[in-house]
Image (cartoon, rainbow, N blue to C red; front, side, top):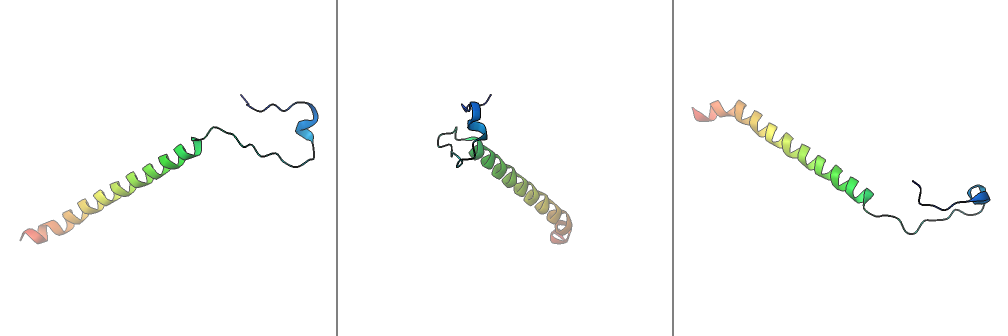
Length: 64
């Protein structure tokens, strides 16, 4: 549901746009935090995969 009280011709007024000063904060902050967390988790997973591949390739050469 909308939280704005626009009635009558206010919605079609050609006057200057009104900036909403009070809004519920947190939505964009949570979205950015979730995106950053997913990026960090993906980077960590790729690092682990890279180390496993390097160990599989160079492991036998180091043990002999």
